[in-house]
Image 1 (cartoon, rainbow over the protein chains, first blue to last red):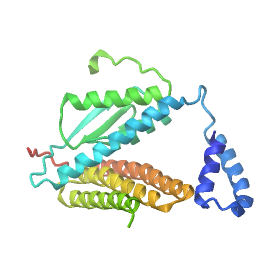
Image 2: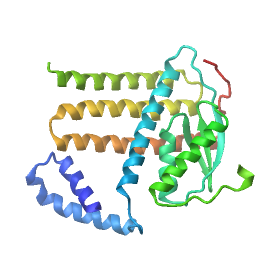
Image 3: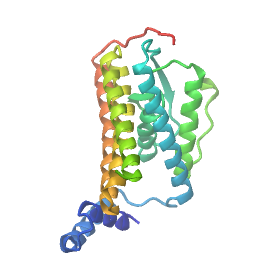
Image 4: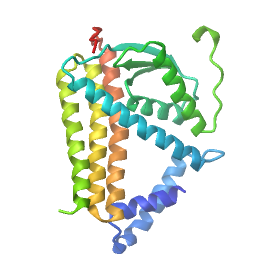
Length: 159
Length: 103
């Protein structure tokens, strides 16, 4: 799978010029080897349906995010009420948390500012109180589904 | 100019509009954290639209894919840079603006 993706990337970079394959095939082989050494494949693999579903969600979310912030920036009244909130992540450390933080920064109104262990410091452009936590919960759930993980239930202290 | 060119132009003009809106946000928003919102979200959307317009115009699958890769990498790097800047600002104690402006 990775070899196919790398091959596609090379093909795109060289505009599909066949004469570049003399150089491209070794490069793809080396990069694939390094990539497998740096991050060994996970068990289970990806589900195409989940990947597409997440991509679609991410796409519509980032369009909404862009439109929302653009509108607030351009309106003469500039309706913003920024606030910092803390959010305890239930995803395991590593790639799932990283993906969660990247997508979170592109979703409407939230931005990842700092990580303290499992706790995220999130800056929100608009204070929507409980709604913000619900959105983050939803995003975390979607990321966990993408990795085929189950989130542990949230402790009562954080409910 | 064909209809196709028109569609591409619409995408690119929309992209340019969002880039402009992002810049307005950087200038108007009150503190570094809010400005980051404008830089990451709005400019990514603007770049995405420009990329779509250019990819449709390129007439080659390879070039279109190349453009999409460019967008993807800018997306990832801007999300990371934004987080690094926000963290640096927090740790240096840059005070967040805590006002509230109603619509």
